[in-house]
Length: 328
Image 1 (cartoon, helix red, strand yellow):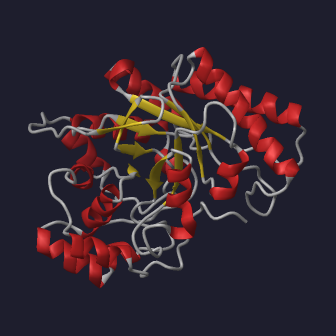
Image 2 (cartoon, helix red, strand yellow):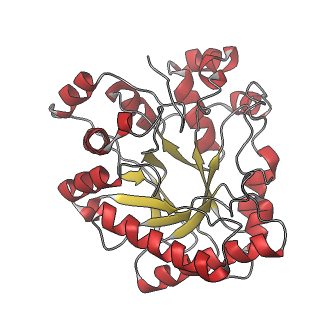
């Protein structure tokens, strides 16, 4: 099992296996439940993340991403999580057109503005990047458009201070305008901490989604207060890297998650995914191995006991892997 990644603990398999499974007729395809966002739009609780999981984009390029989407949807997936910088939106767009646009929940992201930009420059760039996403995906609208992060300071991303907050608000106003025009059915943010969410307070609409790194063992069920902040503003928390990021495989290998998994005849990865769901959040997963893709959807018809949930809620086996919803 390969876990060489840079977007997530990405569960990979041989391309031959991927293509073989794609050619088969799949029976017993699960139904992915949805969550109703604050604007009434229904979003799948599990979507397929398309982030590059290796060094450079070549290993997860347009053709590989296209095949992965086709495979995942044959197994029951209904949603995709993309981004401007992933380098494979054209291939994903081809897959979406083949599947039928109306049958696919399609989300993507625009990059954050740089701290050195003026408000006008930030606004123009955000609008242009929005258009590029639509062009690459070969669609007239997306189901979800996110700001990929707060303004970039050169040392990280942040919203503290009037200048950075003004850039964040300028970007948000572009998304709000496109939402009003029908180019996005829902809009949101990614890697926004409580301070950054506060920065957008009072703007209409408020973010519908905040996608952040979130998984068991970070520690706790509310690392850096990110879950509380999302609840405060009525924002759906969507967890990326729900199995840990590329530097930390602790969730997969931890004695705790493996012991819990054995009690349910599941994998440690499924325990981690189920923990996110039972904390009332959504998931963006990453895999190209059909076995793991099927595992990622086999998380809806069983539950962790309250005692096991509490054990995971209070665990700290991945404490060195903090959420990127922490402001710098």
